[in-house]
Image 1 (cartoon, rainbow over the protein chains, first blue to last red):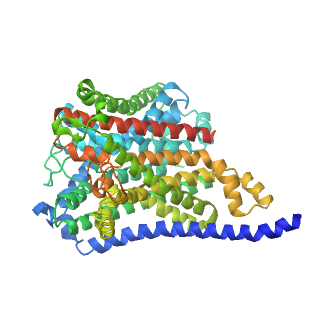
Image 2: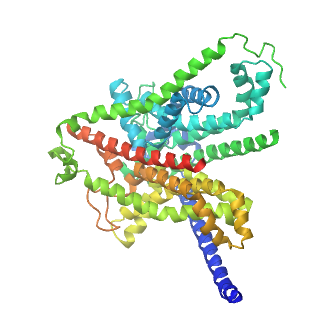
Image 3: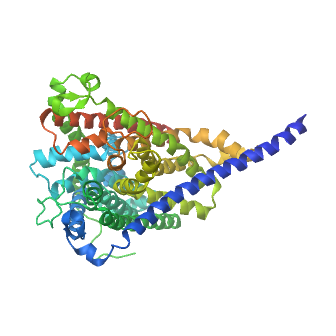
Length: 291
Length: 292
């Protein structure tokens, strides 16, 4: 009886296991295939147009000719403003949450919950908010400043969570040793914990830059569509992602420069993300060594 | 060890207190942003909420905002169809990817595939939309015109939420205690028997939390859907019919909307925000329970 079950059951199970393994491999191949397809498509479509001139020239004829020089400058300015505002606030929050107040305190819970919700807010809602608050209420209009500030709000959750995780991963013995030496908590933080957590912070910063550079919907009604070279922070400036959108949707015959712009954006993001991953990897290995 | 010329001890006794107040100010600022967003969305949608009865958003004949017809229902169903379709496709793919990384691939292969998924997560939505517009839409068009359709939106959304699903499921799978796996192996379970009978039930909550997060992303996605879905205001009657989602509607009409119309768009933004808030809160609650 027992043997019978074993004999009849086993080949079936083996077959089932093999089928499922095959299915999973197929799905994984499918996902990898689509990723490569997208990449090759962009390289194929945009590679020919990509040159130094394309990167530095200003767009002409609604973007059909010329390059993306002014677009890149606008993108850079928006990113800079977003980071300048989001970094101090985000990192201060992370330091407070990780080092100064207990996780279950009222302030801690409130800040954490609102950041968690903020992380899930759709980017178009950030766009609506930025438009209503920065552009209209604060009177910045369609400007690089307004776009940068809107992006800063979007970046906060990712900056806080990566920086806090970095601080929390520093072994407790560091803090205890510092306390035993009579160092103040401020000194411990700046001379001991931050240097150890620095790669994690840098990785978070890069991930934030990647997120910001990819953003479109939040900037449609805040930093605007104007593709001229921006002269001040109160000028409207079109960012790279929005440029791709505009070329492919609103400009007939804009596909070639759109391909090239998409290629530029994607190369930029792949490089940034790869460096960030490498940093996290390096940091995790070092952490293992010190423990 | 580096020796600093000046004292590294920040001798002043009150410096800890000063720093803490500074950091507190930063944290309160960070938390206030969420309050500000709610406040301004409410403020801007107030005119509409005040003299348009809520029921009209679902009972008006059509969406003709210039003629005072504000039926949001076609956009709501558009958003729901596209998100549900994308989840339907992405859940199996995402969980299969996570299982591959956790149980089937060699360590080197698993890291490689994980990198690929993380890079996929970093591709901007506008690039997905652009690729869909230039590659997918013409392909669907040859098969079943017009091409820009619910199907295209579902496929692009699937690609966009797949990384979220794969990475959260993978985290949930690796959090299953090793002794469960060893016990299952000791009982002579086959690999799939172990996964189906032990690992998946143990990781269920984490996976569901990931699915909720992915649903939030799918509902909130704007640009990619805007570029491939065709943007016709209608209830989709087939996979090949063009649709318009709530997010796309805001992006399309905000530029020229005035007075009541504008306020209604803010109402739909508020609706989106509330939907996503419920989903992320649920996910956060499930995730917390899972970790404890």
